[in-house]
Image: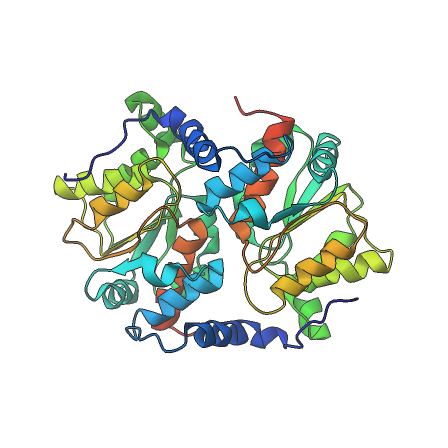
Length: 212
Length: 212
């Protein structure tokens, strides 16, 4: 073995990773509520661009945590994002994670309306009668539908995590969300992803309830 | 709505995204087998660094496809990566996706041995008696264990997708994999992730069997 490995205990790997991120960030001054979110996204992506990409509406992290503490559910736009959320912690707070993308009724509605399943799944989310965090890591069409539903008074989420990744309407859909008067955490630009959406959810969850 | 959206039909979004990626790549000459893998990873991350980060051992894509065509199973190191793999296509080729990270026996073995669940889950993968693709998007300790098992003659995967993300031993674990005489697709450096691992699996799958 020519390669030299760091000797770090399994239970210390995450802690050491966050220390390394902190060292590289150096003297940057971060909002103490936003800092764990930014660091966890960098931990998930190894991409320091998120230091400048992530945009928070005023008090968004606190509002998200408050929602989680009162049992908010999280609706994602991919099974991957749902898979990445720490469900044990979410459920211990009374919440639950949903992704409607593979639901037969969503596929039918989308097909009939000539729209995407992501769009139809946001309509399904709007029908839930519980405090709601929307975590969108993939589909800009989900964000566009969220914008429309909010403007029509049919949806009022506690927080929008708007971090789809990609090329067609991704940048634009995030700009739309930042026009709204609803708390948001958005990754400006093209970058983001299901992993980033899950990391932001987990950063909020672990601020509510540290893992043991 | 101040923002101007592109008018793209739902079924055309992915196609248009790949066109935009192709336009930005411009005149770069890519290996025709590797090109769909590189483009799909960029599609998944909006990060053009993967153009230079992704390293393929000779013929790795063809060897991975051949394995999938003979019914290889894919073992991932996260539920997220498993969630992101197109299981319908994989199963239509006779394959299956596994992630052992949440298995009770894996947790017990890891605890008893003072190692990570990722390490223990690779031991479990080595016991499978089927052609094997290992898709590692998170845990460098999984790659280190794969290296050891191969060196000990206890594991002989058809392909290693080595794209963990992060800080502690991530760069080093990938260098280890590139020392082996086993086909690999590796994202050199710190970047990678469960999303990248799933994207590479899907790029191989869609070359075997285009989606209808």
